[in-house]
Image 1: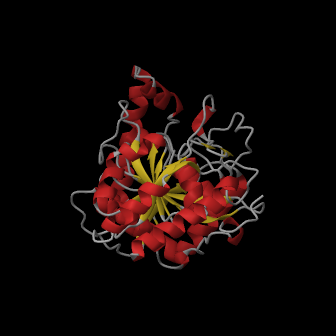
Image 2 (image 1 turned 90 degrees about the vertical axis):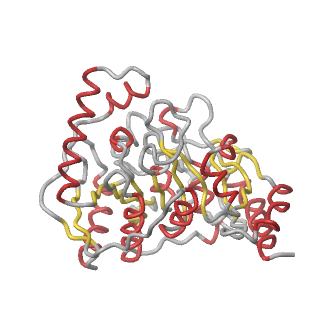
Length: 366
């Protein structure tokens, strides 16, 4: 039996043991994964087990590239069920997907199961897609790394142009394996430290939970002290993109929506002319309960970059006092996905590592 087959078998055993409580998977492909593992061991990814977002995820461009390079898909992860506003739930084969750190809270969405599966150490990486924050929000709330690629960098079935392919991974290095595989050309770009960065706690319009803001502020202070980033002057104040995003998503971009996009693009162009990195909280709020977000827009700090097209990542920044993970969002210039990953790797190295909780990989999750 090959090493790849052994690893896939261990992955399937972890999923079978944990998923009845986590509810991260819609389907698990035992026979297919074990059959694919042997031949895959000779390819660059050497049989790396990964998960795909939703039942249709296996047909995505990214999944096909990963499989061609020797990745082994082990199952499809949960996405929101019908009638779930703002797509911040997941519905797996065993029930609603729970947040690995706080089972009474949602993992975020819509790449809910992908983030939960990575956080519980069931797979090293999982595919996702991000039309308003659907990779970055669950990454932040589950304490893992999430990347939304530059809009249009990879093929997307979303006709509005808002959704981009993305990945959930244990680290920026794991996301790098994904990006290296799905891109035709990948040239590493080592970061020159400290990276000039602009910190915007609210992008000029969002109402941010004070404790979430404090966790992000402490993380940024640590990055500055470690020489990873250098904060430069000037704020980032954008126009609230809510109405513009909704108009574009609905297929009818009004003159008012077009003006918001144009003005925000100008402001972001000016920002990236003076610094290659923008830092914000990933979400304005901590994970909400399974009864829903109420009037809160968890997307408030993410969907501006679906409109503008910039690549953005969420890096674990710490925890609130009640045990909820908080994400630090890193945004870079359009097309600078590889440089963004390199900066994210440096950021990770200066922040405390987030490890899978032991009770998530053995019986005991409540």
